[in-house]
Image (cartoon, rainbow, N blue to C red; front, side, top):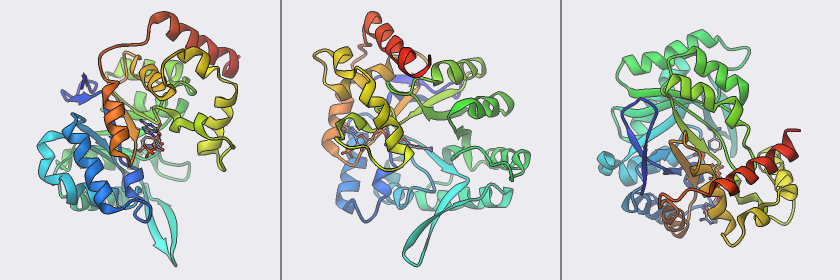
Length: 298
Ligand SMILES: NC(=O)c1ccc[n+]([C@@H]2O[C@H](COP(=O)([O-])OP(=O)(O)OC[C@H]3O[C@@H](n4cnc5c(N)ncnc54)[C@H](OP(=O)(O)O)[C@@H]3O)[C@@H](O)[C@H]2O)c1
């Protein structure tokens, strides 16, 4: 497994990380499978795991199944958003008050069974009705208290770039993949200037091109629409499409880690095999960027 620096934190992270959102879906994934996924990731050299207070049982599972292996991995979680269950229904709470932020981080420490977290990020940036200054100060306070070594935000687009330019953050999580290359112009320049780590969510765009019908909702529906006009197979040539997509993301020199979400140990093994230090040839990279610009930016 190739490793890369996470900005100027001094941490070296596996270029393929594990996105632990899906393992939090308690009803859908048996606990034995969650345990196997987490251990498989560590056994195969993944040393970066991304979770969040909002990801169901994800933090609890990590605490239970692999916190005894903590010296083998770097743990990033998120606060600001969390979930509650009311009358059997999942409800997302957005709480960017200083008190809410600190309480959520403290609860994460307990669920994860870790006194000191490695990275805590805002799940998105505070909303217009929030006191943004007070929110960022609370996040930084968690660092000063020693609850987390580093802080960051998970946010795409110009608002993400503005927050990272303004606050002393260590890392930013955002979307960058073959179908969503906007970060090239919007986010990477700020991260380079600030020497921040780049944690890439949705690095294979949820492999939406495999779906025969447009899924509901913009989270999957937007990427699916883009996939319908993008010449993925033509650009990939003989390479399997998931491999091509992951190699594209990893070919960006400023990516620190691509956190692929999965609940399947075999998929972890397949993804890890792609970390062989081979970037896509320049000619294919340029054609892929050109295809994106022509379709989605002109
Ligand atoms: N707002 C935020 O902060 C935010 C938003 C979205 C995501 N995230 C984070 O980013 C992580 C990754 O994003 P994501 O999961 O949405 O997108 P993704 O990593 O691009 O795609 C995940 C999907 O790809 C499939 N997959 C993975 N490896 C595969 C393989 N080798 N072959 C076939 N299918 C494969 C997985 O299904 P299988 O389970 O079948 O492998 C899963 O459905 C999340 O887990 C989460 O930690 C954060």
